[in-house]
Length: 151
Image 1 (cartoon, one colour):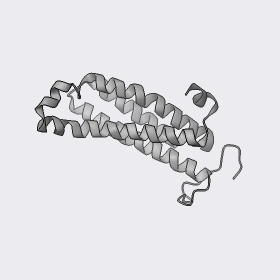
Image 2 (cartoon, rainbow, N blue to C red):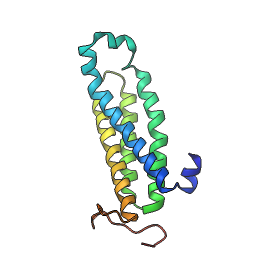
Image 3 (cartoon, rainbow, N blue to C red):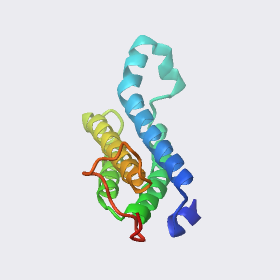
Image 4 (cartoon, rainbow, N blue to C red):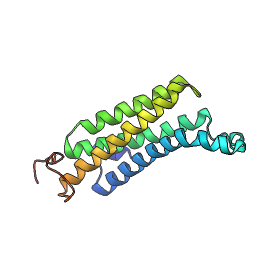
């Protein structure tokens, strides 16, 4: 993974990194919004500790390196900062939610906003990279030129 951060990754690795990073953001959102409903339906789920403070720290430990690899690798290809700005704002919101503490209404809002911003950043990153390889789904608004200036 360090190699990807320093020198950039191939298209397949970036697809995997973007996919994993976006998936963890979705899981974060499902965890934050869905788990309280599950706990209400299954009181025994509380005993599992599935909504404990450790879950958020573990999730951030997975999300931050994946986001770094995917968004930095994408930047090295398309040279656009907007996906990284969205991703950075998302990570900042997730960290703020962790700092606000378990059970706080701000924790829920921070987690939901952070997950949404991260998903938006990874989606934008993926779209820009697809435009570089000439994907037919690419629109003129998202088209960009590769870092080396070739088409």
